[in-house]
Length: 294
Image (cartoon, rainbow, N blue to C red; front, side):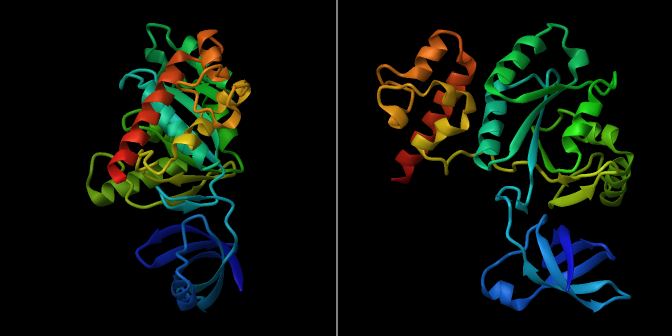
């Protein structure tokens, strides 16, 4: 059998990249019987049905290192969370929501702030400081000035990376700066569907010329935190872990409890109040959902 990786899935067809080229495959019936659905990013073994037409069948799926539900993709290593510093205006609460979802999936997370050439109020420095203190790598980028695009390339090299962020922040423009081949693929899709912008309807992996792959997806297509438990949320605000000297230990939710290390850190300025407010907002959403559910 030939080893490869699924780089695109449309309906029941899976396109597997191998050392011998790209094969269009169906999944073996036993996989469907066992309710195993192949995902883009899966490392698989295929049997060749037709070498000339490049047809095959997926026989085995190797163990996954990671699995995203929304979008459905496997073996992603890293998430680049992309937000503009201006146009659209930066929504830190929304950024924190993206970070929570990325942390929950166990991905290495990098924050990219685009359009910093528009930062007339010079707000980037303080915002960057907040997230670097949390432990995140933060990369300010300007496509206009070609600033720090090379640093983004370094993050993508030899990894499978998913880009996530709201529309209009410049994700496609950044990808076009990173790799011209990606720009051609985007243009071809746009011409084919006769739309003014690239619209992704399915997950797909694209190889980068300098090594690594980009998962071209709609990003985290659902930003709901409904399936996160109350006592679980605090684990996804990674800076909280440095201030766990709470009276109630790991059972502390860092809200109304006395002698809470996290609340003390907020009062002392060691944890950003904006981040803590985002935490309380998400905690409230989770509780509201649970009250409706039960």
